[in-house]
Length: 254
Ligand code: PGA
Image 1 (cartoon, rainbow, N blue to C red):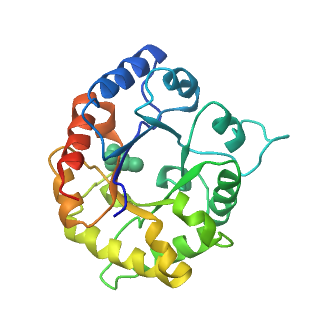
Image 2 (cartoon, rainbow, N blue to C red):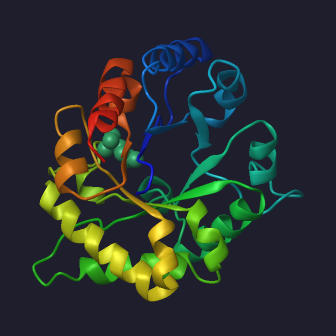
């Protein structure tokens, strides 16, 4: 049984270090009874080092990491630098970054660089919209195959795949709710692609769901969506909502 993981993606929030420390401390204080669930918080880069000192119960993740390790890459932050200050995960290929021009080939380079720096990539995939002919399945398949080119079987247990249908993400214009059955169907599809690519070793990868998850539907996604965890954006900015999601996960039988 894979350990369930709840990940908070703070995106470009909050506006000050003081607010970041308060939010992180409030989440950490709500975690005293949590034993089975892994908790990862991904704040903006510049808060990472300060937050690291607040709690050992929460693992820190970045929201991106460079394809390079060191050198003339203005504005980039490398996996080595992140690992050195205690960061252990990084989100890669988030739809908001894909919308800024990142493609599967860039993401593939970032996955490789992150793995060699010791970071665990959280690879986001998901379609922008659904169509009657179901071509969105092909899109997710292509995202997975192209992002995972050249990744060896030995590394895959370090990776998490986050299925995030872009149309269900809270910031999306005309957002629609995804259901746990949408999630379940895609979960099975992603598992099949991973199995075809890596064989039985693919079972060591966690496949999680993200897209406006909140404390009201987290249980449904976890129980009926079949996933190994959740990636939460907006709800993770509210310590009470985020800790409620973690507690719901912790209370599940398996
Ligand atoms: P959301 O964000 O929970 O606000 O929809 C999820 C994400 O974009 O990772």
